[in-house]
Each structure stands twice: as C-alpha cells, then as structure tokens.
Amino acid sequence: MKFVFLDIDGVLNNHPCWPSGPELMQPQCRYLQEIIVRTAAKIILTSSWARWIEDGSMTRVGFSRLLHTHGIKAEVFAHIVVPGPVDPGERTTNIRQCLAYYPGCAYVVLDDLPISLPNCIRTDGRRGLERQHVNEACTLLGVSSP
Image (tube, rainbow, N blue to C red; front, side):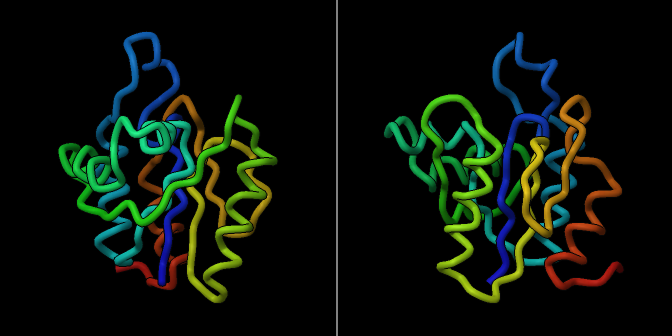
C-alpha cells in the first residue's frame, strides 16, 4: 500500500487564507492530484480538519467528496485526530503508530510542521504544496519521474 499523510492548512492552502475561513486552493490541489494519479496512494488525513470526521459532521466518504470538488480524486483511507492544539510531536507519534499497522508500506508525509519522520516533505505554510514537491513525493512513494 501507498499512503499520503496529509495535513491541509499550509499544504493545500496558505495560512493567510484563514481570516476568510477554511478553504482549499489551486494549484496546490492539482499538485496533490498529480501525486495521487502517479502513485495510486491513499490519503490518511492528519489535519485538524479531520475533527469534522471525528465529531460526525462529515464521514470519510464525505471528506473524499469534498476533495473531489477541488479536483482531488482520492480516497480518504483513514484519519488521525489529535485533541487540543496542533502538536508536531504528537502528530509524529500518531503517524508512527499508524505506520506500525502497515509495515513496509510506502508513504510520504505532507505537512508544514516539523514532523520528525523520514519521507516528510515540509511545505512553507505561506505557499503550501509546490511543483517541486510533486516529483519528490512520487519518488518517496516508489514512482520515478515521468
């Protein structure tokens, strides 16, 4: 299996967008879609946005459909919720625990926080996912550049 551990804020948007509310932005969504198409990876949502799934406001299928409306045709395979404020150490621990269930899987972590794991691509939260991250993510997921 192949997984993209996905944070949203600072990856699929830029943090300055928050005064207007949560949103997903282009071209960041197109870049994630390219990673998904090239690798057939499934998404494990690590973002605080996963709280909407946890509190019952949305299902994983519903979240997948939300992503689809922004051009990301991917399955949200699972989600990880960290109660309270976002803590990079706790997020790292939760991702590590998830990986223990899938030994040998290929994975990449897309996050703007300092996640202490191999295969982590740290984005600049003011810009989000960028073109140069696409090939890097695909390589980490075992797919060579086109």
